[in-house]
Length: 112
Length: 115
Picture 1 (cartoon, helix red, strand yellow):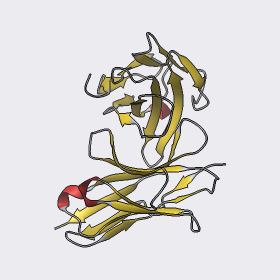
Picture 2: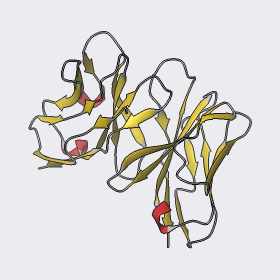
Picture 3: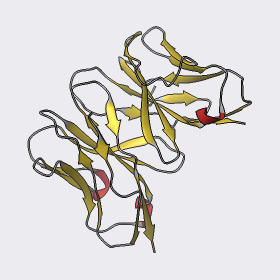
């Protein structure tokens, strides 16, 4: 079955430190991958997406992710986080259907 | 509208009552999705509409759940005889069409609490 796995439920980090949020997907011939962010009491906002082409994808707010086919990973990274990056982050994949399959989310907590 | 609008934003209901949750997608978006977000469970797919038809309703957890969409626009998710395990945030998303995967636009959700 198709699945998306986020290995860390919570990631604490100090402000200005780098961060990596891990995401693995079940292998498929064709998959599109997304990262969404959810701030408290808000809906999900698209951070970035991988559809095809360059495996390094840059998104909003200084985030980037790398599609790694051999490791079936799509980890999200930011070189220096801010307090305002504190939120829930969701990795999602779209296979040969119209619906997105989401991971269980990673809570990023940035401390001053 | 400018975004996906959901109402109410919060709903507290007594166990056994019926509830209706509304989603108003972005104008012109033909695809509409309902997801449920429970604590620690991530986002669970419920149902997908293309226009007024629902080609995939595989995620509806029981026959107490139903959804409809009229005029290719507003959608209503109805939960009959609510149970405490129905407590969750119900998110709606829309997309312009089914071609390509440009990601969804999500609403802010309806937080349902069954007491």
